[in-house]
Length: 628
Figure (cartoon, helix red, strand yellow):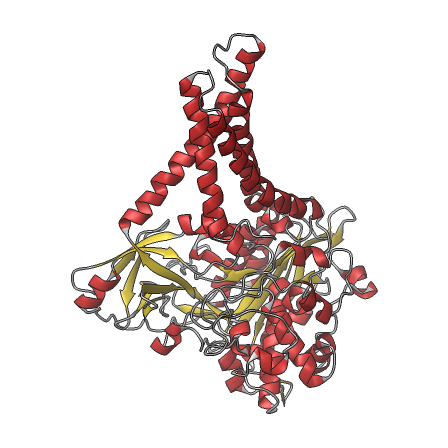
């Protein structure tokens, strides 16, 4: 489901925000200027992929490489079931994850063509029974377009929502939407920022059901699966799907992964074969046409590939997330499509509208690096003999804008609010401009170089589309958009202050853990003079340990969130236990401040206790300790 989409913007963020569930947003990979050694034929491409599977221990892959007029190469490579030695074929069914979201947008666009809805309609207009909270509803209501462009401001699905369907694969859409509305809160004005949200497709599906009078899955099967001859595509784990579905594996390619039942099937539940996906990619290349039948008008497909709600849309910014469809750059070439990650499988669908070429790749593994490498091979193969589009001419940015926008920036559009306290500390970059305004550099993890195509839009030197936008100020903040993500300008003092404070707190945490075996052993041997009350030493240590456990639970194995009841429950318990332990530790050290004990040990424990309270207040302020 989740997304490979917000992909390469910030690598660690992508890992932290359940990115292997529903990988969210994409960025480009530069096309090598010298393609020597790249596959130049299908046999060479197959050999390269086979070598990659063997090298990485990945079981199998389903591939559909197509052109506008033909399915050029549709196949399976490797194993659908390693233990049973069953090969992957063009008929093997894989899980396509968040690529499923695209059908929710198609359904809405089809109903709009029929005059039954408008993308600008409000959610309350169609499904007033679906609960959500938007402080700006009177002036800036949540509209259908916001759900499909991920600009509603809603938090991503919370833990208890993922748990809801673990034991009930047949849960209804109504029950899923009713069960937990806590995450559906607009954290900023709808349409002002983009944050990937997995409940949006569920709400769109409810609107489709209200208008069509039939279950969303039935609507998609009747209006898209059947005419597209996606004969094995299915939202459910039916007996036929179970018979043909590949075995699902963790990233190591050996450990089985469970079949994940999602609370909103429109979000990422589709199972499909390479043959199904070949027909689906060609549907986009033919601009909504299927064997002479126009399922959607070309203008609707083009609208799907375009963002209209973000502030950067008014600047002509082409790199923003559209209607469950996003662009990605391969050097000067611009692909469109979506990708997805779900327990035991990853998928990418991408196509070049003008060149009439595209592909879908599905692996039965959670190894995102493998999917990315196969995708890169396919992209380079499909563009091997194409004339690259001309790069836009380089413009110049006026000096006043350079002065206004130069400086440090921090992401302020968290996908998952629970992860934002850490995300905001690591998603920092510095923007600087050349003296003539004809180049810029972002000094983050990669130090990328940009050239302007207008006063406010910049592209990477090798790309043909702008992927960085100098957005007009809003609510007193200076803003950038980078691959749909919004960053706000912050002071250098704030950046470095956060860095120093985080380092000191981490040092106190580690020292508390490292010192414990020393004083503990000495205490057992009776060689700890002036030990004082053990509670002064133990309670800050316990609080630091609980904080470490909480952060590890959030970040260590994010692709298990949603399918591991024990992990989800651990996060819930630790979210409550840590702040309580921090407050108790501070109470203990304050109460024992006059106790006879080594003063250096006392002040160390007091410092750790104070640090834990500060962290608890910080996490609580940013919503990380809220009820999951």
